[in-house]
Amino acid sequence: PKITYISHDGSRYEVEAELGTTVMENAVKNLVPGIEAECGGACSCATCHVYVDEAWVAATGEPDPMEEDMLDFAADPRPTSRLSCQIKVKDELDGLVVHIPERQA
Ligand code: FES
Image 1: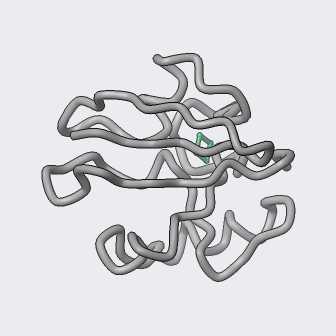
Image 2 (image 1 turned 90 degrees about the vertical axis):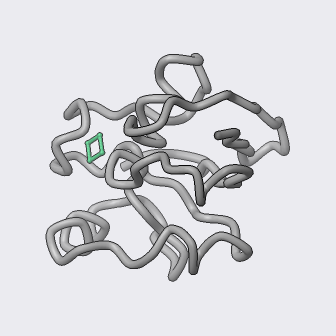
């Protein structure tokens, strides 16, 4: 499935993601800047914060309670905020667009 990351300055990064991996892992693997992922995907750092594009909010679903708590530590959280290490790549998410915040927590 294809994922597009758009940085705060408008740069676009299109990557071919692997099923079963996470949106965070594909950013790191493809050297997409702005996703730090300090905890390596354990849902305990909030430095993999992204804004899901409005068109994809329904498909990506709601954060679970643990992710919700951690999002309080993200810089400038919004209703579309997610931790990208908690979004699993699946066929339904082919074409997913996420926006990278200007800075991480
Ligand atoms: Fe740390 Fe996602 S990588 S919360």
